[in-house]
Image (cartoon, rainbow, N blue to C red):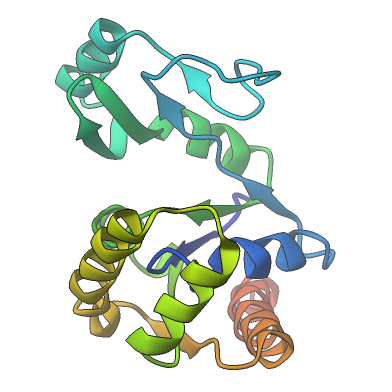
Length: 196
């Protein structure tokens, strides 16, 4: 039986990656979808592990062939996207796929797979809280934080397009809520298999 799809989107700093990492350890048969990118590998990154590394020309060839579920050109010649073949490989092995994508990508994947996919939006309690989290990381200059906040405000406008919104006010509570929502979604689909 082919697997199901769980899509996570959120503004930067909402705790999405932490929640996804928690879910990957919960015995839900979730497999992370490896994205493709046209940027060069960094440090010890390996092709097919962290990303599928393509040249900008290879990436554009895949776009023209319709091979992506979603993609974005973040900067000139710096593309990121989700290959249909990667997702189908995981699903055909009977596994469930989990995505960490931007809001537009999340909406596109949900549209493509319909009821086989559950889209989850992780929302910060408020923009002021998000700013505090980003500043607390100590990794970004003030102007970078300002641009992330502006992007977050835009991304928050997509929240109602998702199946589920989880407000990450308290990480442990948000993780438990995400786990329950995903278990319910996966088990609901399991029950359909049993019906003759």
